[in-house]
Image (cartoon, rainbow, N blue to C red; front, side):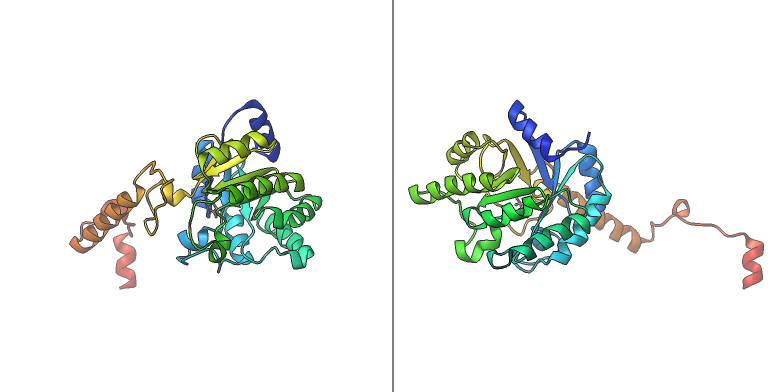
Length: 276
Ligand code: KIV
């Protein structure tokens, strides 16, 4: 059955956990679909994991549309959430934000969009939701604000910042978000927010009390080692296996043991004789 924003709402009401993982292309999207994971996030983390940037700042709306289209072609039942990239939603041009969110849906074929920020983006969330586009909010560590936050740091660790996060959570729910990602937040605070909200919280580095979890797939499969936050668990070591396979291929090509007859196409001798 197709996962929808309603599935998210009902899961929270029934106390069932939600799973989300990033994917950025057709092949991986098909693998996620087979696993039964509820949602794919076409995250702007693709700037790092797919494009090799040092952060998400250079990712464009066109990049997101391109990857979201590919992912959407690979799934049937999995909910596709697509990130709005840096500067594609601002308080100074809300109509533009709505139009950009619309392009992620109509051209990227996403089922909903995700954007970063709390109280300061509530008017943007409201306008996008009013345009019938479901919004997943994202608070705590918001990578697009890295230059303001001063790096990848746990958020809400003192009284003032913890209170601000509670206010942010309330604000995005009030603005109509159907879910909220909590990134790098102390477990106890994430638990409090989860208890306080009617919409599901999706944690990443926010403990096991959230209503769901999200991870970047290259992180969880051991494929990306430029940076390894504390909250990452490697569920496989695909990176090592891929390197091993590439090494074996390289060796066999150079030793002339690949390709063999089995991997080659044949031509009739009479035909060959006629050409040569
Ligand atoms: O872009 C992304 O992958 C994200 C997750 C880290 C939540 O926003």
